Figure (tube, rainbow, N blue to C red):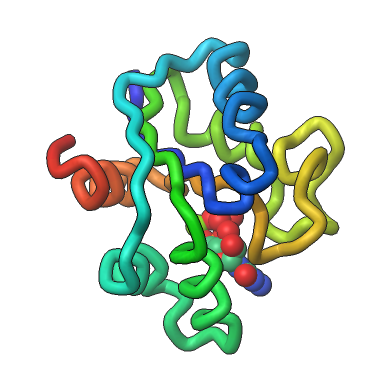
Amino acid sequence: MEKTYVMLKPDCYKRGLIGEIISRIEKKGYQITNIKMLTLNEEILKEHYSHLADKPFFSEIINFMTSGPVVGMIVEGESVIEGIRILMGATKWHDALPGTIRGDFANNTTENLIHGSDSRETAEIEIKRFFGEF
Ligand code: CDP
Ligand code: MG
């Protein structure tokens, strides 16, 4: 069994898509073992997106991610890290295939609805970052 960190972004809340996306995760057979709604501050986001700090769109990401509440979750299942990334679809909205969350609902690369950890290492770091323990 693997664990991953999933976060539904502020556009998800604004567009009323929280239920739709949680439902897709559950229907795939994954278990949500912890969930909370929170409003993020700049400090935690700069840490979370530190791999993008030198990109021109960095401040846009921070502004977007502080614009409303997010839903943070710990999701468990077999190969769940890769499985959630497949459900999410590609980062860039125009590369995300229909049938994926981003492919079905996103029309913008920054406001792309969902975050999912990209490796076992980052999953552990991110779960600790947002839930305090792994
Ligand atoms: O979220 P994902 O792991 O697919 O992509 P990332 O490369 O880790 O980027 C994190 C987030 O930065 C994305 O989900 C987008 O919200 C944002 N981003 C952006 O606004 N423009 C890009 N060209 C790339 C990423
Ligand atoms: Mg990422």
